[in-house]
Amino acid sequence: MKFTKQDLLTLLIGLFLFASCKNPDGVGLDVDPGTAITGTLVTSEVRSETIAEPAANTQSLTRYPLGYMVDPVFGTTKSSVAMTVTPSTLSYDFGTSPVLDSAVLVLRIDTTANKFYGDTISSQYSVDVYQLTNKVTTFKSSDVQAHNAQLLGNVKKKLYPNTPIKVTNVVTGKADTLQTVKAQIRIPLDKAFIQSQILSLPTTGTSTNAKFIDYFKGLYAEVNKNTSTGTGGIAFINLSNSYLQLVYKKTSSTSGVDTVSVNFPVSTTSAAAATIVHDYTGTAVDTQLKNPPAAGSSSPYTVTYTQGLAGVKTKISFPQLDAFTGTYGKVVVNKAELVVDLSAGTYAYPVTPIQRLSLYRWDIANQPTTTPDYSTTNPGVIGGYYDSLKNRYIFIVTNYVQGLIDKTIAKDYGTFIAPTGFDAFQVVPTAINAERSVLGATTNTTNKVKLNIYYTKIN
Image (tube, rainbow, N blue to C red; front, side, top):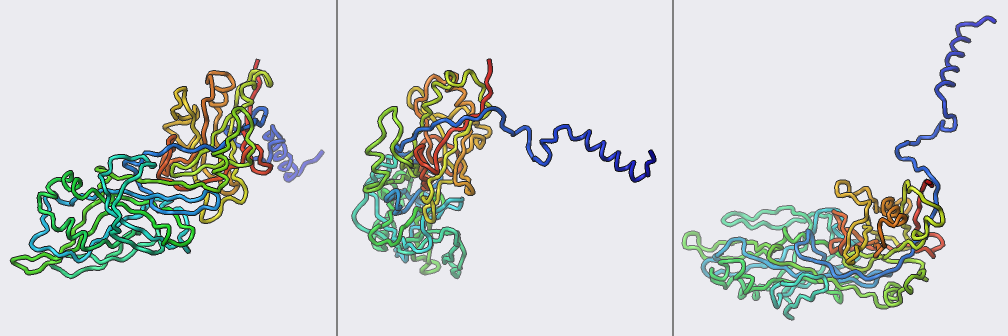
């Protein structure tokens, strides 16, 4: 047989391709062997129910919730903030015959993501300010922070948490300047009250923060639901960058009358707290809280609920794992994932779903702790992030499921799906996240929670 150079080249290329393709079934498949899931797949039942969160600790929060919101599913949520203000300089001297020009409580809106939850388009927010009756000494989100009845200030406006504003900067002895500052809520306060309560103080009244706090107590801000409009929302306030701004005139022997601006910073280290109230009256959430499923039985409800600001969470259990070995034999769990679907039609502006959920469990003392799959060095490995394409959350629970099957984890004392803190995975009620999600239950025909277990049977 006679070969041309072209025929020989074609034959050599063909032999090379044949030798290289040892697994023709894999041609065209872009699969990373390190992440491929092997073994037999079984989908196990997950039972779920809605339960109330305990009160959250609101001491020394990174940001504080302030607002009022009407949710078509979850009812109403209101969060108010009690705060302490202290002199910027100890033994501050207001000078000779000070006369107040203005007093403004400046509440800086947080600059991190998820700084606002709710309606920024059509709602108007009416924010009232009062003086506290007592110093802040309790910090649970359910604690009532008493305040005087006299209204000290109010502002009614739309909130634009991403929009900087321009304010006048008073410069002593020079012309005032206009400066651009980050988004904030500015609430004018009663001048006569501040004049008598603060400017009339002798220097002994501001000699220490403790003395000033004993005297003035602090301020209380809340959204007035009766004079606000629309569905509303919750703004998150960075109190460490908030302050009471006083602009006043004082008489000087050398320059006559000077205009002075001084800030009394909000002191989160001294005391600040949030009071959070959820009202579920007339909602399906209220129905589930009052009528939980019987112990050990499946829930009759097609959805469960989870909500930030110490609202509600979903308790889950895995009833089939106890008898898993008897049904399937002794196994090694290659991967187990808890798939949590959102219930269709329950997430749309302004009530968007939670961006990350926590999965945690109770220990034998009914104290919250992480599951065995959680890693402090890699907190994201457990999952729980919102998948906006498939409208679901996935948690990795491989070690947890293996432990429950093998009985190395003796008992499931309680496993929970709840909102996590904004910047960290946590297992306690959060007061820095207002989002909520409606989750499909096992009885939901289209969007249900399920446990996928990939296993290999062993002798």
